[in-house]
Length: 287
Image 1: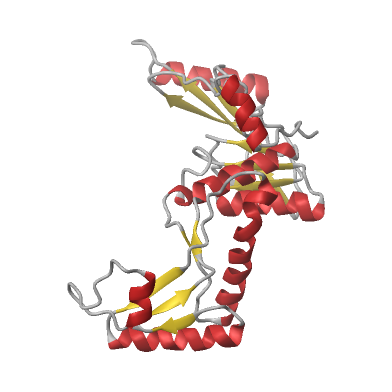
Image 2 (image 1 turned 90 degrees about the vertical axis):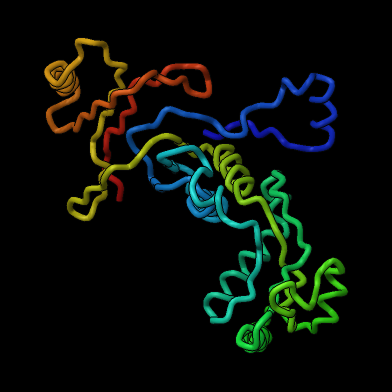
């Protein structure tokens, strides 16, 4: 079942301005996990969410859960550089990066989410003879690959970047590898945009849900049965009480279920204001 989609637009922005911006819906839902999905993707970064999105868009596979041990986009996606480029030397690398670079050009429109892509170009400076020869080699390889990249002179570098000092301050600028259709984007916004689109297709994005193991039996994949109980321990809560708690949980759910007790200072509320004291993943077979 898909969510009703809320379309971002200048009209929506004006409308919400009059409402003091109190009418914006959640960008993506925060569902309780089910026991079974057709596809489970571990990691809600750019790669994981893009995989889920294209499974839904290109192949109609929407019974998908994307799990992340932290918050969405809180891993490498939120820490890496903003550069978008495809000027790589090897043919396989250049091909996949050029495909990705081209996707960025219309991704904001496709996702109806501003990923803040700015195609301002990417300039890589050569400040040693070794770097200069390496970039010249890359430029020639890119020409054969059909990637729009070229070497430019120090004078052309100065024209592009008037503020630059060509003589240093430490090493002189000998030239540059210029990709005019490169640029920058907010990678965390890319993750948010994909998450919103996946959620609109009915996929489950489950944050703060660490995957601790995967079992395979007879060619089928099982997520290990795990119940994690968060406890704010009192003064009398010790090892004996912890084992008793595990025992009681297994009596209700079965002896095969793994039970972990996590001692915390407080039980945090979820985004919808509720307590999630127990995070449970009851495994079911996936083909």
